[in-house]
Amino acid sequence: MKRFLYPIQGFITLLKKDVNFVIHLIAAVMVIIFSFYFQITKVEWMFVIIAIFSVLFMEVINTSVEYVVDLVTEDYHELAKHAKDTAAFAVLLSSIMSAIIGIIIFMPYIIELF
Figure (spheres, rainbow, N blue to C red):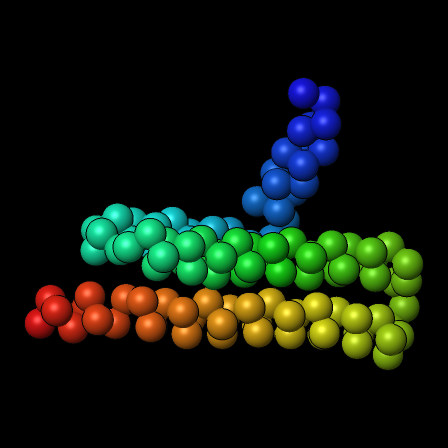
């Protein structure tokens, strides 16, 4: 059980320190609720799960990069900025991919409602 202590501490740190992670977590819960409501297929579930976890994973990596960069230097440095900016871009790419997956999966169900 000890090996789960550090990941749990990491999760708690994210909840306390990273508003974007919490926002993505809330969005993930909403998507899961919609998925149950629309009774999406097993294949659609697989894509939804991949989309959710890719965004959360990228947000964790982005936060980790920010912590490491801040640990290494308190001064402004162009390379530190590049590290943070590219990590943030990874989150953006994952979010765009997930939004596209969401549109492809949920749009037909939403159109059926009207």
